[in-house]
Length: 317
Image (cartoon, rainbow, N blue to C red; front, side, top):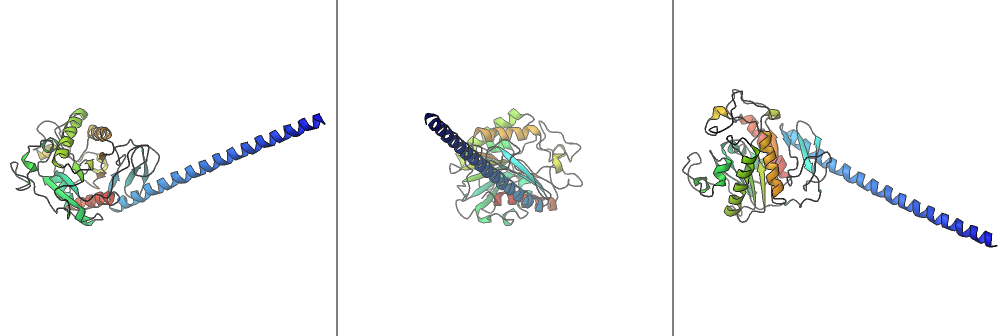
């Protein structure tokens, strides 16, 4: 009797262990299946954004755009952190993953695009009618609005009246927001300067600009740092390109090529201010202007650039 009882106890224990093991395996399988579904959903979102950008006929990448996150291979929601990529028709968009980064802010009442002449050249080609809510966007630009100039709180360019082509006058708002035009809650800054040739110069200048932006617009909730519209494939169009001291006023030395140290500086500055500063979309021209005219692009290319930028911000209102 004792031996049989011991055998029954042993058999019962083995059955209990087998049941626990089966439950654990089932739970693990369920978790793996859920993770697979989340990954697939994130990839689908990235592909959809890629197709929209490709439809504009421009190449666009937004690696880590949401919160200055690092570029990676897994696609997820555009909330920040590591980013993933999916190729589309004629363009590519990389969306950020969550990765523990701050949640990206949206639904801004007024976004001001701050830039210079090359900014206006594409912005004025239909940007506010290409999918964004034009009543919530405005443009402030000056022909010579380089990074260090906008970083200077005493620059004449900050004035609200004058001629945007005159170095001693201000920059009136173009198409002001219907609400909060003087107190935008998001700023998209076209960071351009052909005279800075190191990452550290760019980081220093951009950090100084951020201080000025926050002082000028205490209402800001977010800032996007964006480069100019790049050459096709970001390969030089101007064979006479010669960046460095004295290049800003000389169109013949300028180009639409964006050096790697500029991109890395923008990423570093965004990483220094998580949840507030982000990397904007990187848009490439479809063709070089012929004949080459510094960094200036053709009217048709500028229209496509406006569509590509609008596609991005329509998804990030």
